[in-house]
Amino acid sequence: MAKTILVLHGPNLNLLGQREPDIYGATTLADIDQRLHELAAHHQARCLCFQSNSEGALVERIHQASTQGVDAIIINAGAYTHTSIAIRDALAGVAIPFIEVHLSNVYQREPFRHHSYLSALAQGVIVGLGAYGYEAALRYALDIHAPSFSK
Image (cartoon, rainbow, N blue to C red; front, side, top):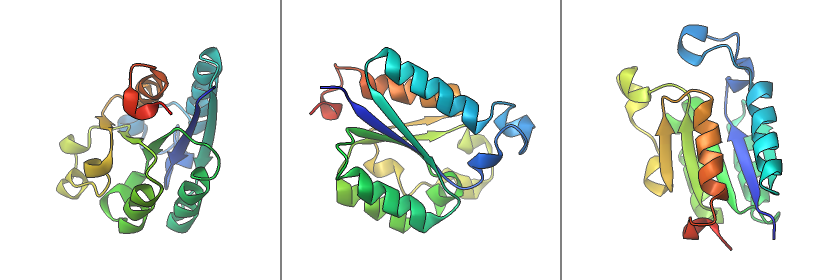
């Protein structure tokens, strides 16, 4: 059975490629999504990508994942990482394994970015690898040797 991976992008990630390129680089969100779709297809898996600047829309999409056979979630919650108990509770509520991803190394940035409401529940956290962090997370989620990601 092919795996289905949901990739969630939080606020301002729609501006990738133009927003603070010294921090986030020149890669666009469309570039990232395209690469993830190609990688998933290569592994006979399905990748669903969703971006929203709205906390509520992200929570609703997490809830939907539980009825769509999603095997794993990759999430870059952006600034909501540091503020959203609602996203944390949604992830806990659906009990779908997830990986937290951040393009920049949040520990080299402002102190308020050092805390994540999501990390304690995550299978893993990838920070500072730029767009490759998403690919690394997807490769992990697709790896058949990751028992917590297999159904």
